[in-house]
Length: 530
Image (tube, rainbow, N blue to C red; front, side, top):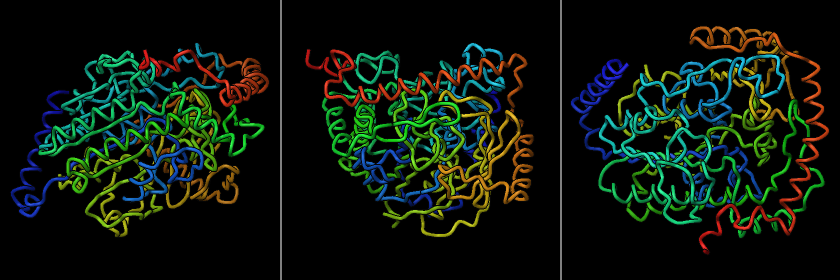
């Protein structure tokens, strides 16, 4: 594998040299810096700029309005590791093989979850493949200093950021959530504890800002990957109080949930702890954007902002609502895969522009290479296209299908599915029984506007195309569980409806009560006062 990767490096180096030799103008153009901001589990409607009236995100809103907003921007998966691998490789999940979050149970081990599902989830690749040339490696080969800070979740030792093209790795380990929580002391071998009560999100931003200042006279590719706003949802008492009072002033709904197919799902944005977590993320974005400006780099740094999957409306901490989009993290509907998707290129006049052209996070790889005048490598980023024409205000004459493959059950209620989206249509194939749903986009799917019965010919064509593509890329599939017990499955569902739903409603009012207190030091945030 090492020899194969060296060969691919060699091909890219030859391409770079050839480009520099034959295209004099490219050499004369200063290479832009790249700042890529990835937020964990941030829903499409978790920002002011995308419609939230509860969460306050002035820094991200400003960034979005200074760049281009892609209103149909998608993550390549409804959960984290597959989506992140797609950003790094430019490939859809079925192609690179990481189809579930790394650490999820598969096969017969799934039975230990006692979910009593009909299928046993498919196996998946557990580390970012070494044979792939990541986006970081592509920039490193082209002379960029590469930096990573935050959540990695693409493998353990031997498959850390520094093993995939990043010169510097701050806090990137195998964990999918912040071990020890969002306030120091945390338990991360790649991030020193400096001060009790220090906020993790702000620390990652400060580390990134420090890198920017140190390397202001060179070119860099900086990837800031927040652990926020993933669980555990934690904030300070002051931010909780701000959003608790705001929820009260907006009017607290009598009920905050309804039943989705498998689990209750949140219907309102009124969790004050999550509100504080989102605002802290926004504060941190402000820190790094200020660092660019203070160091005179805001005019020659491309900034990307996105999320890895939908907001957590069901399962985990039931933190937010993605309405009017249906579902959320783990789900096959729009709420699970449609994301905030912003690109700011300072020298292009696209401030405030938006486009409904369907894009996906595999497109970041070729787009950023193209904008930086680095040769594209289509054999690597096979499932991405350059969005440079759109950013320059031109049309993009591309009619391509988008594919998702999730042969697993989500912790949040998602089902084993595969999806094809093409020409304004979205077809979902369900692996439990083979039934399908067809939607005409743009659609929120909230009203379950399945139009398959009226468009059967389109559905048949798209289904055939989807299944053929899955075979072509060697996709893995779930298998029937011969031990499936429908009575046990029904009992679990009844318990969810009659007990879990009630407990969630009670917990929602608890966190909104005036005397709410999670513990005596507010998740360690008050340790700074000791």
